Length: 369
Image (tube, rainbow, N blue to C red; front, side, top):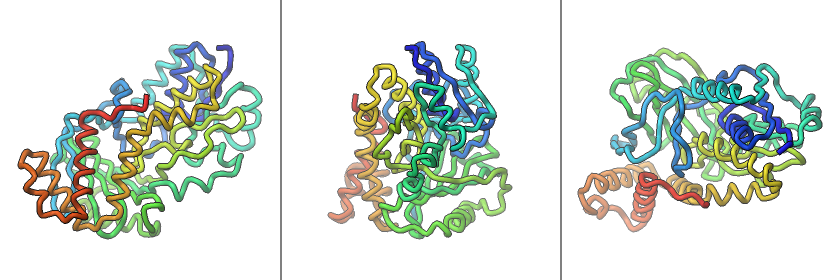
């Protein structure tokens, strides 16, 4: 356990790697280009579908009780069975960093790792864990930066000030015939919310990235938010396909840098935490060559289901999405299979898959362990 580990980035993956190194008695130094908790571009949903994580230790705004899906109409789905919270990510990450410092982890804020000092870092430490997001510095050094865009959901988001009391302890996700993707409202409080839009990855159909913000503004108008005060503007990539190679010499990719976010909803905090932990465990057991296969096994149950669901969704018309939502919503409300009977043979398998996915999420997806 005498190996020294450098960790680039103090986001969820980097902090998880540092915590695991501390637990195993390994020496770790965490490099953050700014201050811990700064520059977060996230809707701040903490979702644990595999039920492998403890609830957030700090920064919980609320446990999500309902998810409203909006197509032609709006449908409320109970999320009481989901391990889903809206958090203050800055507060949560700062809390984790404080605990790590107390345990003896060296956190170097204001120290950016670039192509220039990257070789020195690799020489100074036995292993480097790259949790620097997208594109990671490793991709700039080894020349695979272009992998991310086509395999990512592309997002645009505002933090808005307004009246969100109607979404107390709830979130909203909307669909449109105008793009392959979805719109969201994730309240932070009664008067503030993350409001954004994502286009799906290229493999699910063409996308015009120049229309991203236009589509978001159109959705805001539909939700009577066109005049809401803009507090922050952000956006970026949610890489949703694991890279073919995750280990480059003595560097291991984790989190977003490894291509680990959901192809369905773009969330990635859970996979960031788990991959950061698994990278350190692979180093500790001297088996980094099995790191990627280990992640595949761990995440396979959820990713297989999510990819199949997003494939069917992206190939469906807006009217078909409406039909599936209406049918499954009625089914979950205990109204029997009657609402599904009008669906075509083509649509019934999609409704069944969505129903199966929702039930699985409520009960918790088994990991590949």
